[in-house]
Length: 395
Ligand code: HEM
Image (cartoon, rainbow, N blue to C red):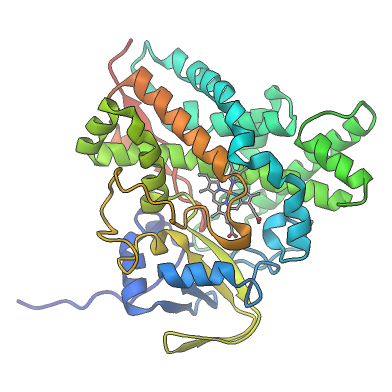
């Protein structure tokens, strides 16, 4: 028998084929090239768990201040996610207290009501698009409520944020539509801020940021950036997590039956999906000095992709890492990043994801995914579905 050599190893998050199933490439990266250089776009990639953990904890060497996308940072407003201390500490401190588990817990009833209201119209048909009808709407509704936006604007805002994260195949830049959507978001936020400046102060996140601005703790551009990052981060990823959880249940019918029979396993389902198939595939950093690692040197000033979902499947860290197991309940995964920039909204995301699954499972019961109806979004950072149609016994 003639053995064929494997194709050359290439990690290209702008290649749509890799969005379908990036995990075989990640495995090869971890084993064959833990410091990988993409010469087409001149960036590096770290794929092992320990290397990602070390990088997110060493902001002096792996800075976020040059942007956390692989593409060049276009002149834009200051974003929490794209800063290092001391700026980062000042910005994060402004809202950190709002997103603790204790502060988000009282939102549970609202999330549940919203979830029920979104599912109800589909029960008679026995068919629902988990993303379009449900998961795309729930987190946006909650973050809009926290920010203080009008309910009728949710679809508009969601459309723009979806466009911002999309990338065209093989194009190492934000498409024009993405730039336009960014400008529309900033116009919308500016109009909202101007409107509020004329009225009484309100007790929501925008009200809090405006009060901080009045005290000189953040400037107008900073407020815009904050609203921008919360609108995008608070929406895109949680939507994709809910879809990925449904898909993994479908791929693992035994575990689907177990979770249906014992809903206390849902928190485990959330954490294991975050580890095994988390929405945030990678975030970038830039080296501030030459970094010697695994017999290679990453020169100073280079973009480095930290592939969190590869680290999450690293056999050096997790036993049977490529096996999905709702009983594993990993709490040290990289799905929410780590270090200073560890996800601000993790407690909210966990709550939304758990309640969403509780409601889906208790109302739909068992559901079957229509494989032919699956469609993916395309982004180097975020992985998940735009359409995920399921069938269930009509009520
Ligand atoms: C399943 C859902 C979510 C996932 C997978 C996720 C993932 C992440 C990751 C990996 C980071 C680290 C970025 C880095 O290291 O550069 C991050 C940061 C962040 N996330 Fe999330 N996130 C989720 C939900 C949310 C929600 C609901 C919010 C809104 C409240 C949010 C707000 C943020 C913000 C503001 C940051 C930046 C924090 C900083 O730079 O200090 N995220 N998220």
